[in-house]
Every structure is written in C-alpha cells, then in structure tokens.
Image 1: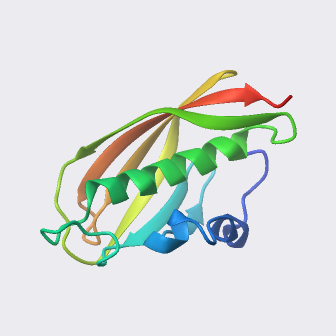
Image 2 (image 1 turned 90 degrees about the horizontal axis):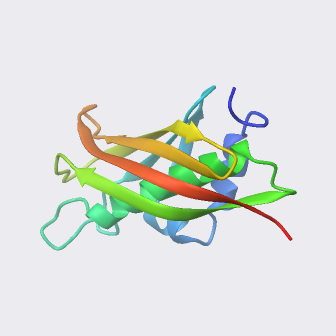
Length: 140
C-alpha cells in the first residue's frame, strides 16, 4: 500500500464538507493499495450551458483525487502538498449520469509527486484523462 495508513471513506468524505467538493457532489467511493476512487454526478451544478459536463468540473474531480492522494502518502506532521500544474484532455462528452475518477501515482518523490486521473462515464467509457503535479513542502 502506498498510503501511510488505509484511508477511511467517511474521513475522506468529511474533509470535503462545506467546500467545492461537497457543492459538486463529489464522493469518495473506494480505496485500493495504490488508488483512490470518487464519483461526481452530472447535474446542473456540473454542466456547462450546452448541457454537457463542464471541463472545469472534471478538473475539480481530478485535482480533488490527486491532492487527497498526495496528502495520504506524506507525513502531514512534517509536510504538505500544493499543486504545481494540472492538465486535462476531455475525450468524450457526458450529458447525464455519474462520472467516476480513479487516481494512481506516476511518481512519488521526495519533493514532487505526479498523479494520473482517469474519469469514466457511467458506461465505463473514458471521458477525461488528467495529470496533476504536486510540490511536497516542509512545514516550518
């Protein structure tokens, strides 16, 4: 397992209370040895004016997954993570249902982390792929 301890889904979901995560309906749904999974409903809150899932909502889901995963592999008493860069390729439009994101590590280093996030439709089709780079900083 890459995480310092197995994360509890209730704990992960409580972290998002009163934030954009809660506003968009993002819920953590699974934890594996090297991944986290979360879902986000496709609703009026997550759509753009043409009725499609907003690319920015995909990025919020991706950054949420990657940032939380990054936090779970460091010692939070000594370090914290901040985002350096995120990109997203929107591959398939989504009009309804729920999208599911899964984050896995590409690189977990002393000073940087790189995470890959794949977002799938309810029909298991790849909708978006994203890569997040985090800086690992020492607390002072």
